[in-house]
Length: 298
Image (cartoon, rainbow, N blue to C red; front, side, top):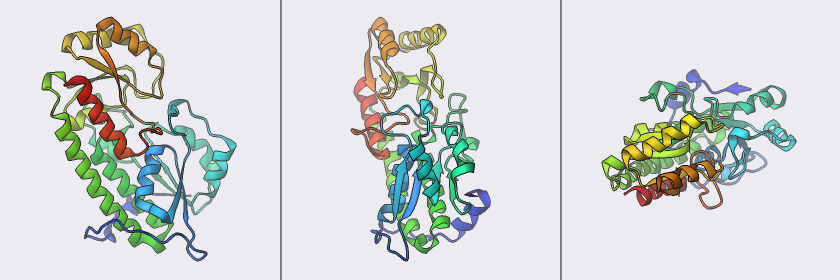
């Protein structure tokens, strides 16, 4: 298995096209150039990969929509898919460590493995973001993900390198536009209400990017709600006078709703690491989150 590390990234980036072109429409795989088989641990990574590869790749997400990835376990079918993949995409940072046990036994020697968050820990700005593996909550970090995915596809399928670079360039422009769009939308929330209170601590990089304060019932890796954490959330609601807290669809929201009821505030919805049938792409998720925050807090 080939792990896409820093030296490989430098070499691939040096060869990348400097101009930005519209997203290409690839020709589906042929017998000579088959469709690239890609496995991603979560739906967000699969969506990013699909935007880079288009019809030239077939991407499977291991964690199904709406599932709690913190409690996920690989199935025999997942292991078979991993064994057939030419490119494996994981997040790293402790988010998808469950993948590790399958790599040694199932992966072919020429398979490329991209860890998308590699190196991003150096960009952490706050204590709230330290140790948080949900880097994509900052769209500019999602750009870095796309660059690593592009480089992995180029290594795994060099015959279509120009296609992957062209698609990545176009998608990166969209992501930078998304970042500006979110910042403009969030400006509708009064500064004193820019406090995001959620079930689990997956929004540290969002807070760093857009200047929001954060409070959660459980840490990044989820877990049990403690009385101390519940008190912390209630104090945050009271001290900042926020009118809403935000539940995540993949987690039970009973405790958060109880805290909201005790404090007399409403409960909105926000997505952290699991897509759904209603919010099926990364860009849809980020736009939905921004809209939900504005609706609940302005």
